[in-house]
Image (tube, rainbow, N blue to C red; front, top):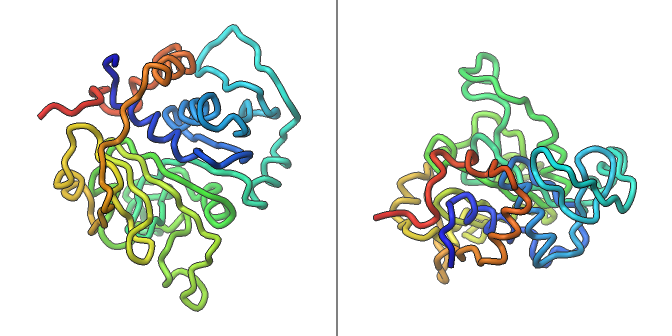
Length: 261
């Protein structure tokens, strides 16, 4: 097997969120999520729907950055049709919140008091409606307690499994936060009461390191394993989808995929 970077390992792990999903609209927000969506389409989920980011569905994922090849369009997909897919639950987005809490609630609005924030960010954008309408997963490039916060996120932008935030304390069965991929591990919501659970550790990472980087208690899968390493085929596809190596800037210092001990 060739050497691989942590970004490439994360892309492969992120692509798995769309496995067995069939014909849903994949939205990867950011470099690694976008490459991951393309990898999923070209390997294990050929039915996955993708857009050119403007107005069309595309037959094949588009490489990142400047390119000479022309997109192969398969249908018209303006924002009105995107929203139709959103409200019908026919989308799975891979997003990167600035804060996440133990309930899976995400924050992209501001850090600190909403009335007088320490740091102002994007605002809530589409997070509220997206989180209650369709499946979501997360990619976090820097796993640390400032992201995975103790208590609640400073501003609840996306819904999670906190009964206190739902009418009559009932979290709807339709809420679906699927996976969290970080630079340390892969997690899901399979713990007690939809608690966040560690399901795999990246090569060379220990469970103690993950726990120390998290501001709340984590459940651990009984089948805890190592995150699968990229295959030669996957690496070749990743390089084709990212010919300018934009993925090298996605995780700080572009570390190798196997952590040195």
